[in-house]
Length: 87
Length: 89
Image 1 (tube, rainbow over the protein chains, first blue to last red):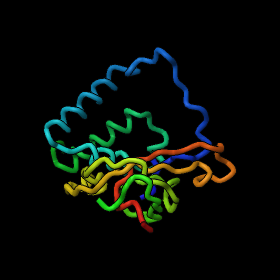
Image 2: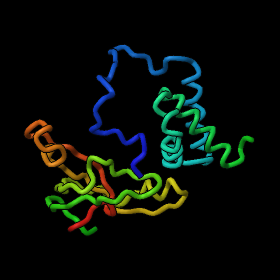
Image 3: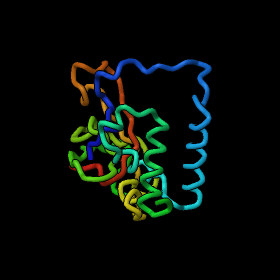
């Protein structure tokens, strides 16, 4: 499906800001989200493609306003709720 | 495997529901098979919890075929694409 993540070739987002010595994470919680996702996939709770699908299923208006790891956390929460791992 | 390096292909213009890894800017476009990678699990199916493998290829596209005069001349775009994304063989 053409979902909001499919922005290749699209104008209007401006230049990509990056710096040479950019840290891997901008806050400690981002590293935790990264680690949590790795563990859940290694344990077989979901796979990488199910995770990517969950990111793409975020409400479009919310998706655009989220940072990268906010999208990750939102997708993880949706997958765990779907699998009744958390309620 | 049906395709070989150097084969001319067209990409599908499908717009299926669900996870799909053929980006919009590569749909319904002509390209040339550049490399064969063997069979890989199709991400579209794996996103739905099913394991289905297909041949995976590197396909080269002329940027001018994608964006016409808005693209730089002599610029090539490469994409790794599954066989079911390719039609008109």
